[in-house]
Length: 217
DNA sequence: CGTTGGATTGGCT
DNA sequence: GCCAATCCAACGC
Image (cartoon, rainbow, N blue to C red; front, side, top):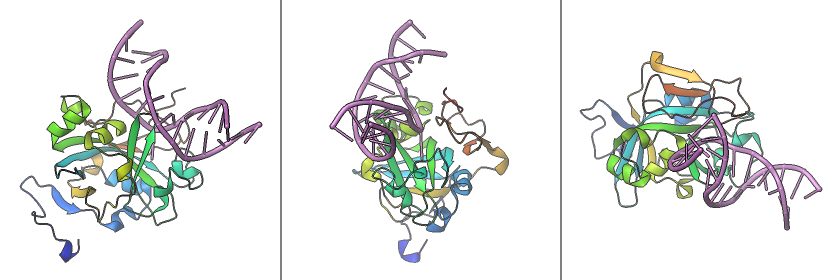
């Protein structure tokens, strides 16, 4: 982090979690590299009233250029434009008529590549998340991509936000798990690209989504 | 310009 | 396990 961007808070708290923001270079790699590396990181959301919500990322999925399961498989359009806007942007889209999904954009501008953030372990602001979700138990707050966006109040207003320099959503270095603690499998809810094991999760973590991977039909 | 189906969720059988 | 909810960009005609 550049010196003039130094935060007022300590770089590392008593918890051992690094509060340093992930730099642009972190995202300027392929999604399959970034996705497992995002596990254990701290996703932070600042609400309009200044409240800080956060959670530890426990589940991600990679979507690569040329990947038939990716929104980037088709030409750039109104919905997926942010996927082409370069590393460190937040790509937010709406689906199923109900839910917002949030992604960290990877690779240089012009290359559609992103990591879907699927689940976090709630850390700060759990009361606010519970209110937004209409659920009490921590395990129900952000254990799925739609739930995550609802809990953190993320919608189209955050599409295109800069995770590196923005003031409403970012990702801190946190505390990555041991590589042995990362499990990979096929992605959830897609009917193509099933040959790729691009869903990553913290093995055995109760905060990962309950969605079954594999073809629905 | 009408149709289609989706990177999901929660409630009900 | 099944399926409705509810929006909208992409695609086909």
